Length: 98
Length: 371
Image 1 (cartoon, each protein chain N blue to C red):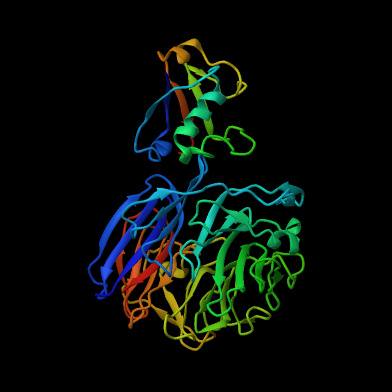
Image 2: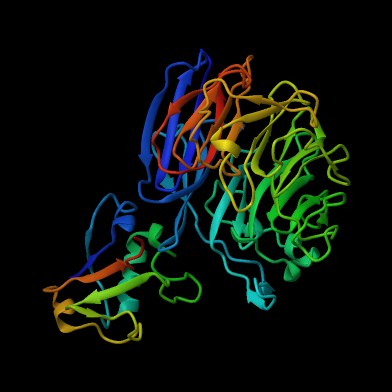
């Protein structure tokens, strides 16, 4: 079971659930996790990545195991701790403002 | 019992303000969609319980919400706004070609006749239509293609299609306005479009009388006179009596003719409202006095409406979609400010009261008159 934590804005779109547990089949990558997330919550289509190009939105970041994975290939395997569910995969809104 | 429902979009959520026909006691419901920018909410004229809302942030993109019970509950509908074909480029600020990119929905305009049909004006400027209650969207691409969208250039606020006026008498006629391209009109349901900017003069563009390139902030019409249009341009207040084929200036005695909003009295087609703003570099009212100006002569002669509005130390702005009128016997006028106040007048502007004072910056105000 993959654990995904959503940022506050997206949490409001899925009945205020911050952590989502997802069944993901096949290799566990950014792409497969977000595919599964969007399949379960279609309202999230387009909020994390562009619906056509599949590129991560500019101000969205992916963190796990205290690492910034945002610039990794979307098809690179996620860390074992995320695959095992002992660590969460964070979808983060980049900090901004003053 | 008649009543009104005021739909308020703000920088950090939406609010629904309701009152009976007296418009003295108000119930404030919100924030809805808290934390999101709510550029616009608007109800269907055919089914007032159906309301569409544009929800977005720069971080997470665009969501469209729909309510079928007057705003009590909401559900997301389609948010895929794909430009038709290969969208190509428009002019960037430095004159170089820039790819057409969807940013957000600025304005939602439900059909006058069909509750499932709604138009959306978006940035980068284009017009979309849904015929299934917002579930799917398709671009009316004749606007960009027949009107050389590749030559359009954004203004400081972005290249947004912000105003959509459907003709109440001709279902094939629509006027739209784009910042900063100008007004365009279709007479064939959106297949082809023509620029309608003759008579506009703008400083700050190479050819001040150009056919396209004017920074139109807002246009409005009265349903009984669909060929008469009123415009608040970047500078200048204008009117047209031939459906936009030509425009004349009606700024008259306004203290400044810069501003964003313009609207028309519900029962008097020659009574028009604006909120003068000091200048394009000073986005607050002149002299710190918040004044609505009303003309009962279709322009040129304007009177300040000040009763109940702050007349000192007021430095808020009133944005382009932030004024609306109701259609009760005594016309109600409403506007919202970047300071978070929503002011209402139940007597056509003679006096004003704040419904609420401390919302996030108000982006849009719409009113539904309920039977």
